[in-house]
Length: 477
Image 1 (cartoon, rainbow, N blue to C red):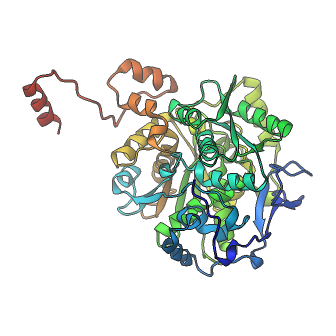
Image 2: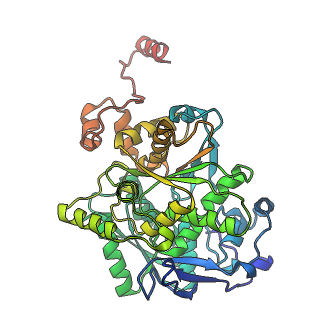
Image 3: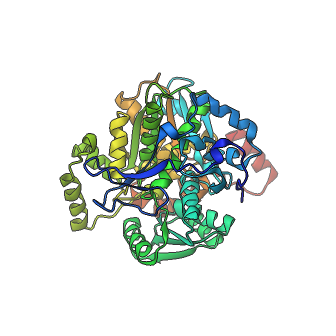
């Protein structure tokens, strides 16, 4: 574990400038930051972490954070999350927990850009698969885990499609500060992700049902047993996830891209991104906000259905709940379950729906849905460009391609697609896509409507004879 215990920076002093506030403007109830809650006591709505910015030590310009690179010997500044501690100052620096998360990169890629339909130099991939547990979740987990330690929690729990469980288990294992309790649905987690939770020693509970069922149960169990809940309904999670945007800006020399494109599952990332840019604009650190595109998988497209088809909007906080309730009633009545090869976003009832609606309003956003076929074809192109990602990540690239085809994104726009997880999170889907074994292809992908592997890179079978091997290499290379 990397943890800073002695920082001589002024900001290492404990500053109680953070508080929790209900996101419903009609309620706006406030609570201490040093308290455990995942919803408003008064109205039951989601909570934000807010700050008395006039008492905070906020830099006058974003490029002041460049000086932190010179302090990489300090675990706080080595972290790609806590390097920006001044923009999420809910704890003192001596309380921060870090395992070196956030050492990710922004890669400009013309090969994937050509696939999407962008001009040269305009498409960038933000590769979050380089985090310690292999996904973006570590950005938020280190913040939630820090708060859990501040509250002296002994156990932490989550419902997960795989990445959250891997991240929580890693922090518990690396720090030895608490025990991880993980809820997963039956058959709804890839072995690549499950192996992490098991290897890191988490107590793993598999229930009959999907992620939405597991989410209901983990909330009940956390309340009943007093276990700290780290799903993104926890507002501290989103504080850490804000820093993905800070690192993108850092890589772009503090210029603002035109578009941020991100997969939509539980909608924590999109919610966090909206909050990040709203705060930066409020603080005068940026003069404009990029547009946001949230991409659902077609088999789990609640946000698309509500936002694009049924017209649900944030509306300044006055969200019309009737269409949402009606849609959820339809899901219950028909027994509909989320079903997509992009298991990380296989969620029908996103807990951060309202916060995402707010982000879409603040960032002039759009929502699209893409098929598993489009996701896997985009994933193959990302891989061919040198960055293997899990299927859910490729939804952002498939969505950018769709928006480019529609003319919503211009070829000259600067676009950043967020790749949320590493390729080895779900190797089965990758192998099945590229395999010449039709039976395997049909078993893993065919049942999900994937008809072909348009960009497959299949292994070549040759006899174990030198001449045959040479001929094959000369023919195909």
